[in-house]
Length: 290
Image (cartoon, rainbow, N blue to C red):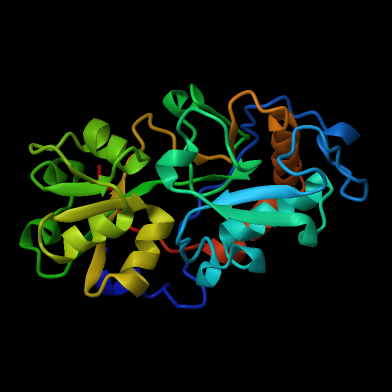
């Protein structure tokens, strides 16, 4: 796919992308009784919440479009902000009873107590992370893609997965993107890993790496908005590495079953699909590198 074509579906108001349809792949019990919070008109039980009568939700700082608009999760605007408020409603919380806090990506999935009830910032559900924290069932599934700067001859010449092995790639440490580089691309030179996507972006713009691996929604946003003169090289195959995103909770949280039941209910009644279409769009595709 040409770079020109890949941008035809990009606008600042809404970024079109190939959103993967969620199926009924719930990992929790899926109970839908009143205690699980399926009746939004009933008051939620206080047990297990950081602050009784409140739902404390964490996200990153900053939180980026299209997941959160203008770094303001309390607005309800943006994919993950909208998901968060839909879950809150399913649990029985009014919007004014939702409180937001900020965490770093790595701190939230480290062992130990948490200052939030749930955390939402594109956390892939993995067995390694599940040793330290709980996850809800998935609210979204994403693929990975390579972003490069125009004029990079190595990246512009890529047309297959084998071609990517000669690239010097970068990604955020501990991310599914980093795992995909190692296990799917298997590059000739080990990936450069960075503490944040901002650091990785700076390395790409400085020419220190040939390509940056991001989840596909972020790749669309990056090439359309915040990385100048960039393009999507191609989409990487999953090759057995699922990238299903779940809400993070403290390990053995008494809320895990309730939150999972809420996510399952939103999937079954079509709310997750509607939110995905509103904020992530549909229809635009990129070349799958095989």
